[in-house]
Length: 129
Image (cartoon, rainbow, N blue to C red):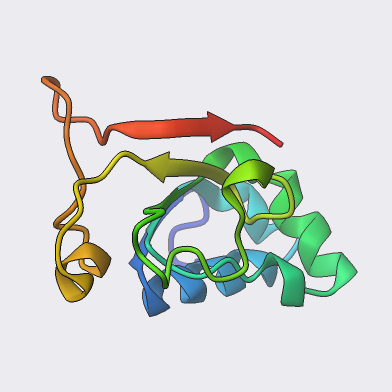
């Protein structure tokens, strides 16, 4: 970060990597939080409930920059999360994925994800809260 003081970062993670990204953002300094351009995380548990108040405030301050994709058919994605709550009490904006039903391992590995004609992930719902 010191070598490139004007650089912005984009973070990506799947499963455990998703949790790593959530924790990394929750622990950024006041200075470094401004370096976050975006985060895209996939099929990871929601760690919001185990963050302390300071960490929750940190991730909430950049909620709109964090795109958290969760497949309701993937049990790992749904740990700590409820479809009815949307993005409330979650790290980032939760995008519940419209997925096809396939075997458990491939479901978790995102092979159930469906794309629209433009190549975007199809979602059932997204909410800001």
